[in-house]
Amino acid sequence: MSLNPQLEQTFKLDKQFLEETKLPIITVSASYKEDLKGLHGLPEDESLSDIVFSRAHYSMALAIAVEAWGNELDHKKAWILDPTNYVSHKDWRSIELTEVIGKTLARHPILKMVKDIVDKFGRSKLPILPSITPPLLHVTQDITCPILSLHIASGNILAAQGKKIVQVITDPHVRDEYLNNAEKENVKFCVFDEKTKTEFLEKAVILGKKVDPKKVIVTGPPVDPRIIKARTKKQAWRNGPINIVLSTGGLGTNKSELKKILKKLLPFLRKKPQPINLSLYAGTHEDIYEMAKNIAKNEHIKTNIISELNNPDYFDKVGTSLLEGNKFSIIYHPQIVDANEILVKHAFPWADGFITKPSGDMAYDATAAGCFILTLQEWGEWEQNIREVFEQKGISRKAEVEHIDKQIEALSESKDKDHSWIEEAMRKALTIDPLFTSGAKNIIKAIKTKQG
Image 1: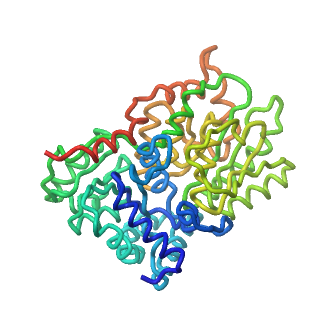
Image 2: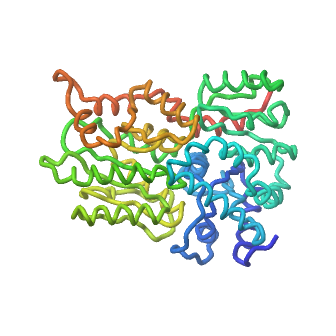
């Protein structure tokens, strides 16, 4: 493979760590090359931008690793590898192209009309798949223990090679591709809930796949234990400003909705008494970061920028959230590892509610942190299912983007001298079925359980 000398070094170390660990975790989410250098004690450049496909596939893999690590990072307990970091120079264009296609779709609502077609094409034909295959096969060639896969592509590539795979189906939705190797003895599955298990087994019959139901284990969604810890100090909102996080996704999804909401809510901050405090999670997206800064400037709203430029310490003690005491904050970092750490350590403990698309990271994480959710336009059928799950539990409602300020006012008002919808939704999130907060533990248990 053709890599620069530092990446050659981290590649060898990642391969070694993956072979030595009890819990090898593979995902396909982003190219966090600089943070990999830092993890392995090499010089890194915090200003360089990552290529990011998905926060979810990174954050959920990390959630399981943090659960396995306990109180300190120990590669012998768990290690994550993303082959996106080790695509060769000659194939790197395919990675850039995949991100460009994803971001273009995510930022232009009119392209939603062809989204389903492109999505189906993208997951089976886009050039990222042959690009990630060589480094993935090389780094796992000597591993004989079960490998945990957090992405459909990595799971199918390795299962076809005869590797023992535990594939996590993270959403309440089963794509046909999940069943490509379902009948093989070397593969088993962790699924969102009982309904998803039924869908999986039903689809197996339809596709002519003979699958032992014992191979399909209900675990719940993986959530970072640090986020779950945030709920222990949280109470349902009753009065005062409501702390709200407005969030995009890994590809910068829902940008047009974010712009409309910022234009509604930033002037709303000036109302007396102050109804909300607002934070925007811009993730790794400079264009969304700049857009928010400009809108705030035009509205004469002081902006608190949170963009830590240092190596993440997964186990440092968090004091007061950096969002505390600020009317409007923006969380931004050009690299996904750091952006995610700011979100985990400062946004989830602070927030009463999230305005976000109903994705398989934000919806799970926000609920586990005891927050209410107002949902933006979903990205696909799986997110429709996620939205319905949390609406049925009384935790989530669709965001009225054009009237978001009035919606928040209405939802914060008590009904017949009883609790407001916001308070009730937070209470339901704080008392949700343990399945929604135990996924990481259950997945680790499942990968250790022998089949049969």
